[in-house]
Length: 82
Image (cartoon, rainbow, N blue to C red):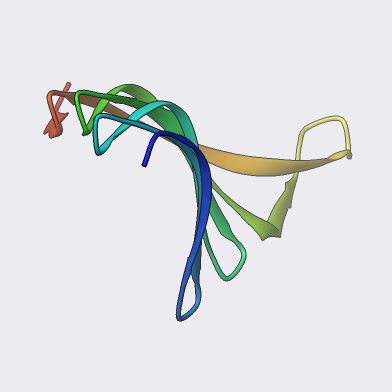
């Protein structure tokens, strides 16, 4: 069914849109304190996805707290290595 969905499976929560029974556009996928955000194209991860652990912080050179953010690039559902 098309439209916005929020799906809960065990410890994973996914939020985003479906069209023609496939994930499209911006999605957020959360497992415990890990949050991944990115886009789906034709039901597959595509483009930049960011992943951060909301509980894990570091102190930068200015003495301020920052969150580490991992970046992963996908093309048609396949991770692109740089």
